[in-house]
Length: 237
Figure 1 (cartoon, helix red, strand yellow):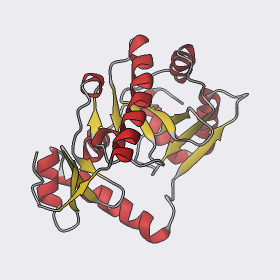
Figure 2 (cartoon, rainbow, N blue to C red):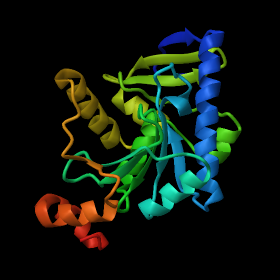
Figure 3 (cartoon, rainbow, N blue to C red):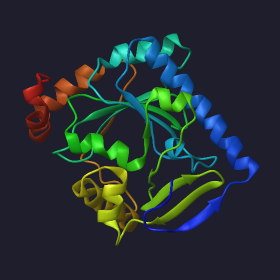
């Protein structure tokens, strides 16, 4: 696969290939655990899907359809994957709230799931960053996507080619098969994060071990009008 906008080739050394193999084995363990419980609508996304990992890269698995949080937790724990923490996140009032299940104390392995049906543009985000379904992961495929530096990453047999997204938004959208809206949205969000040094999330709440996610959701429904408006039509309030 060739980059539609050229770029610079990055050649991986053996250490980097070794890190990628290790991160992918972790992703496969999580994906197999979800599949064993009957989950099908999930992807591995980000650097593990693209291949441009380093030692600090997270392993991100996203369930794309709403599911009971407790059921997902039980599924993971049956496979020996302990849930260390649960964080409810809503980036802005118009985004769908999600729960992030962190599988280690350093938050390097995470399973996310939406509390409500994702909007089409929200699903496109995963393709924008690069995403793999289980069968692709098991075949050790790598896919193009955009990293947090706003660089388009296109895998090659020796590593990857990278090129800037800014100034090439339309070409990148067509190449990745996503709308120009999602590209522009991510450019704005990641540029703001780089300039301000933080995410500025609308809601970010760690759910205490003694409480259920559903309890926290009901509390937010009572106390936060904008949250209530976003989820009420889905029967959560």
